[in-house]
Amino acid sequence: MDIIDVGIYLFWAMLGVAIIIILVYAIINMISNPKNAKKTLFQILAVIVIGVASYFISRKLHYDVYEETLAESLKYKMSVKQVVAVGMGIIMFYILAAAAIGSVIYAEISKVLSK
Image (cartoon, rainbow, N blue to C red):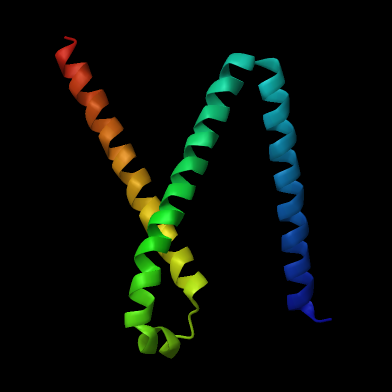
């Protein structure tokens, strides 16, 4: 076991501890403030719904396209599942970016109109 292996194991251990601390803090915060817990759970559910929707959109788009671009996909050694996963990530990013930009525009317009 050389120094790189020790570093990798140390990284995973620290990441695991950080995730545990974050989860414990989030659970304590949700128990102490149930109103915010409800909002947080709805936001998590919204992200999951967007993820599932983008997966199905990507699957529909890329299963059809994969057959046409099979040679190029094989050139990069990508399977259908990998192509769909990358497409899902890109589609999810576009949806969340559009939602973020739309919410900023809505906030600015409502601030101007409320004066």
